[in-house]
Length: 311
Length: 115
Length: 109
Image: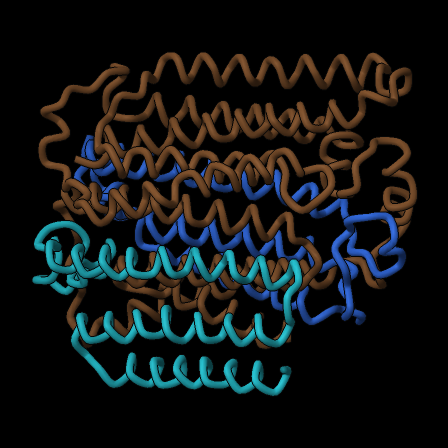
């Protein structure tokens, strides 16, 4: 079954790479992300599949918003060359990239180690994570216990990218007036009432993912993205921009500091060994903080795009 | 050579998207190629040690059928970082098109030479 | 019970198949949207009802029921949004806008 899925996967990716129209590119990318999420699930990784689905929907929204702005800005393009010259140009421009890519592929195939992957770490983690870290989901136990450095630096990376997005948007004021929203299409009554029915379900689902992250698939990242989508729905209902940027960014930085402090106190000072009864509390709290961090980051990016990059 | 088919697919897609990145005429195709490249890397990591009848590593009684939890824990962070990188790329695309009115490599190079 | 469930599932799959054929048959956007709504509502919901009948009353079928409720609420919404956006899309992203470097001189900007 996975092989059929993989054929569709590669096909949609190649279609997305060679697409000439922007609408098709976005649609092919969405199909590609969905199929890859199904493949991750078949490969035995439901956590990664959830993260991929949530994140791909967000990146589709980012792309639509950005490309809408892009077409209002870009005016200079080179026209296609005449038909008899296309073949020669393509020949010249294709030989070198094909040679380079083929060389890299050959080097990769030559240097990759043969034989099956080592199962030492897998067996070690699977046999000991329930006693050493706690929880029943091995993935959550690894990224909150054994490999907490990865989580810390991932949170730092997200913080830096949010700061980058806020810095590179076209104006640095943190407020926006109502006139800049005058041209935006309003949602109509059907949208608003249906989204009002759906909204609480999304929030409950996100909180469920966060709080059950240590015993079932899910966790801080996926739940955070689900909670952030609740705030997108809030924008769709009200069509107003009343988010205070400065406060949310300060909250995000404080959440990051809290993550660092909590991990340092629990992991590095050895409280983990001394108080085994607090392990579950630590995992739930850490998932909650990570979810707050991720959802703050996504809310900032989304509102920044909607407010400053759309019109 | 003892390669799984999933790994071969992932490697092939990685090099196809690398080819797309090299031959892209503008920034948008570059961004899309980078997204696809990242997901193919994720697929390669997850497919290490894949066999049929594999189970998610949740609960204590899965035993030998469990998937490897370590690449999964690494790849969740990789996916979140990937969407953050995509957001920064999009912002740079808009800033570039606002300043130069174009996002093609050739025209941008020409403008830089003119300055 | 299992036979009835299988029959209902196959009916749902057949509706989906006719919908896919219709997607390729129609060229107009609104007709395609009509067919899409048929696939999403009639096909998928019949399919899920078949699965529920097959499994009997358990926690699994309760989850499927929850997904079905979400489908019933969300599918008309997506069809409505698509139709409204198509009706209003005089500006914004259209099919005529090409990617950078692939302009044929008159389409797009």
